[in-house]
Length: 144
Image 1 (tube, rainbow, N blue to C red):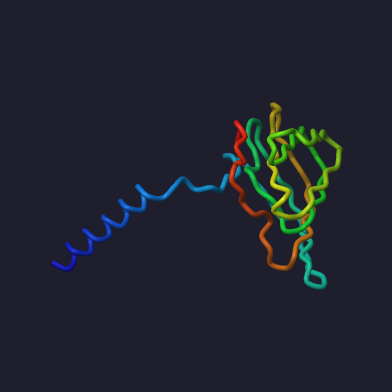
Image 2 (cartoon, rainbow, N blue to C red):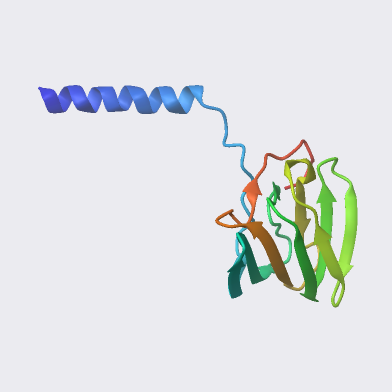
């Protein structure tokens, strides 16, 4: 009897959750986006992490922002960068540098609109223990 009651309660809670909760607001990176840490150190409460990020053709980083500034170089391909107003705020080609400011008021997405993988080397300068990025909802742009 208890097992049947537990099963019933669990089913009701699961159904109510599915029916009443809205879609998750985070916009994760597209399929195949990868990152690997090249180097990492912490100095005076600040984490300095160098990562290589690869974005396949047609994919994106997802909408996000950072708790500290980022400095990057395009090693291969072309990065199309969009701000929260859906406007392109930069196109960066192989060898070009990019800087992303910190804070929730700097929501953005990086997209690979080309036909070759986009490879970025990125230096994250973050408060100790902060995540590499903070997910953000799509601000209403017709793309992801």
